[in-house]
Image 1 (cartoon, rainbow, N blue to C red):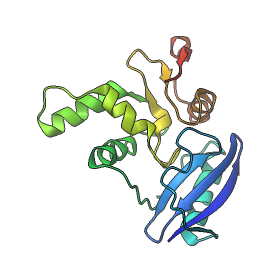
Image 2: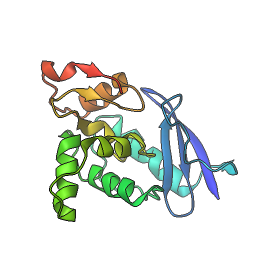
Image 3: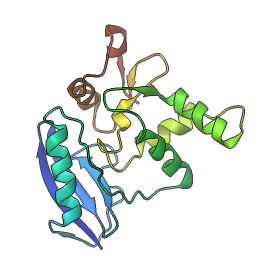
Length: 175
């Protein structure tokens, strides 16, 4: 059974979803792939997991790096889960690129090359925005590309974290 709850962030209303294992979704209302992994049968009910995620968000939106984990139950392909696991290692206030993640996966798998576009597809389908920090991934040339919640939110989240965004990186390019 999945449970849902809403959270009002400074960037807009967020829908959270969790089951008994962990957080399964966190979406800005109206974003691309909104509630994609949400079961048809879910209950709008506050649970300890959802309350913990809201506490994490409260700290995050005050500009602090929350110092406690949120239990996650990410559902996707093995490749998507591999990419999402890497996203969770990107430090607060730092960024990486789709190409860097692709190279990391290629090395791990003993491959010469991994498609940055495939990584981009997995990043774009991340069901738990912010906590699984897909907003910290940039295009190879430093461009702010493809955030499902919108480039404006990506810029706001990176600015909140104090991430370095040189003027050249503000060339937003929607996918």
